[in-house]
Image (cartoon, rainbow, N blue to C red; front, side):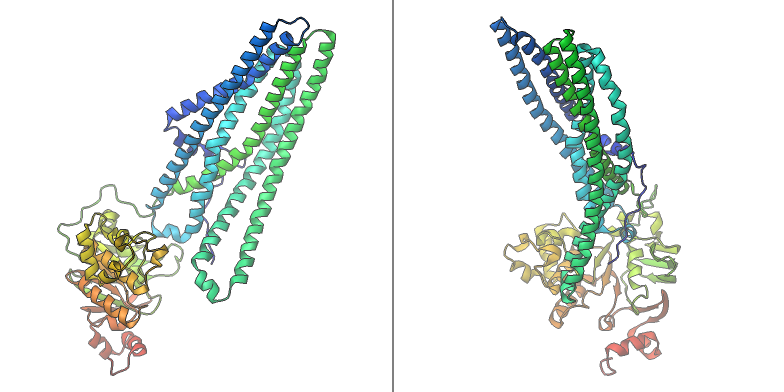
Amino acid sequence: MARSSTKVAVEPASSIGPLGMIFAAAARYPGLIALAGVALVVTAAATLAIPAYFRGVIDSGFAQGANPAEINRWFRMLFMVALVLALGTACRFYFVSMLGERVVADIRLAVQQNLLRLSPGFFEENSPNEISSRMTADTAQIEVVVGTTISIALRNSIMALGGLSYMIVLAPKLTLLMVVAIPLVIVPIIFFGRRLRKVSRESQDQVANVGAQVAEVLGAMKIVQGFNQEPREVVRFSNSVEATFNTAKRRIMLRSGMTALVIALIFGAIIAVMWRGAMQVADGTLTGGTIAAFVLTGVLVAGAFGALAEVYGDLLRGAGAASRLNELLNEKPAIAPPSRPVALPEPPRGSLSFDNVTFSYPTRLTDKALDGFTLTVEPGETVAIVGPSGAGKSTIFQLAERFYDPQVGTVKMDGVPLTQADPSAIRSRMALVPQEGTLFAANARDNLRYGAWEASEEAIWDAARAANAETFLRDLPQGLDTFLGEGGARLSGGQRQRVAIARALLRDAPILLLDEATSALDAESERLVQQALDRLMANRTTIVIAHRLATVRAADRIVVLDGGRIVEQGDHASLIAHGGLYARLASLQFDDAAL
């Protein structure tokens, strides 16, 4: 159950540089940005206007003999400011939220598109469950950054700068006292921010691990329960949750400490300023309205700086999420089309050859899956590959579809080296029927036409009929529109295999790869599937990986692998007569009479 994690290029602890990916994605929507920016400026200006109108209200309305008309005018203007603030806030929320949702959708799509380009080797080294967690948890964090955090940061920056400017106009000396406190605020932000960035990244990694573990256990629930491992999985999950909690607790403590210190320093400065202002009012050098406006503006400025201290932590978390997604977005496929791909011959011949191929999987470089392997499969020929477990049989399929490139040697299709051709062109000439029919959580129609998405209804039913799948598909509650469940759970194993065969029939490719599609079936299902396979193999080049030797006796040629090398080849009778590895494997499955 061990899982590897995506390799991380860690940013400096205090860096918010990875947020550049978010800004680049948002820059594609200048209209939304402009509207959100206008709303943001309007709301910040309206908020800052409130103290100015309060000053007029106090100086004009709370003095003896005040003019009622003047009082009414000031209160009307104050109410208008409140209406502008309300409307601007609603607009700001709408446009910023829309921008956040759009950016997250674009990032998810871009990451998924890049993931689909990566070769299977990448997913050997990186847990798909963890990647899935990144696509959900990390994008949710980015949505918070775009839809809330950046807006709050910009709004409070405007309010802080605008408020300070207005305070200078009101009382320069008192403002100087406020400005002195600013470095006392910035220093702890930098100090705590560096540590918070690192802990935030650790926290996100822990959350991803929890999500990956949940997906892993739920996907193997029958195994977990069948081996009575529920208590162990509870303990394992509890350990992961506790590790996540402890990391989150450290992050929360750091963020709480930073926020508390910043707010304490700011409001300490406000109290000192208020004391000094009260002394000036007593001296008659300031009016009551002026000191009220100054104090109210000071509160807004202090709140703005406090909010900036808090959102900085969110920005750091967003930067961590962005850097993790950016790694996936910038990952380069190990298997990529050449700059000038060689076109495969038309019409397809269906030949496949391996010339002195040596290959080791990226995660097992010291073990040779194939070692000096040479084989030519002629057009229309059926070749069965047999051998003990680990002999290299499945590796032949992996190289034929160019999911990997060999370290030594050449694989060719119709005479063209695969490394010189476009991988999509190579795969378009192959159809695979796996050992277990892999189906998607979709309806029957979509699973069938996965081999040829534009296939007509008639073609789909023709393929289903040829695959002995028509009867049970017509019996489904909604026919081809019936949802088959996760992994085709609503079908039996034999039915899933026949759907997989129908899918390969629709593909109508010249080369067929069969990974022993009958090994896990009962006798009746095996008979139906084998009949469908016989129709599928007709007039096609076929390579069969055989685990049950009863299925290979009709092959034109049987190739026996051991340790990544060909040790025998021939037909069934000659190999039995030879008395080598094939004969020993056969003796384990048949008695002499059956042979």
